[in-house]
Image 1: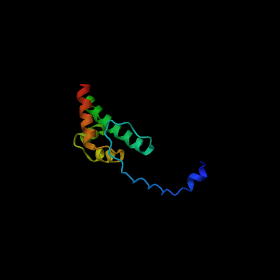
Image 2 (image 1 turned 180 degrees about the vertical axis):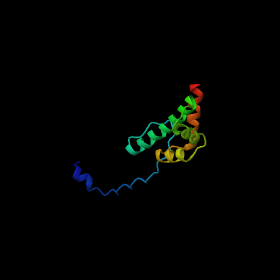
Image 3 (image 1 turned 30 degrees about the horizontal axis):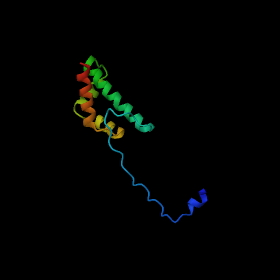
Image 4 (image 1 turned 60 degrees about the vertical axis):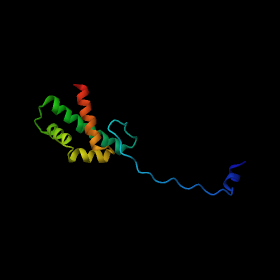
Length: 105
């Protein structure tokens, strides 16, 4: 059968697949290939690293790491915003961060 013959069959066209909203990702899932999502995910990782650095070193002349630590421990506005853009549940991100601290100790 040729491609032309396949186009003229009496079979009804298949319905389009329904649009599906993307689910939230956990903090441990690999990043997507989408550049914007990768950027937000990297920003979230930096926030968590700054919070970890503040906890381990304590020295923070500019207050950046201290602000990150306070925001992560209280599930603050910075964490919630980054998680929303990175499609990560903020509570899961905090739980993952706390678990990684316990494992490193």
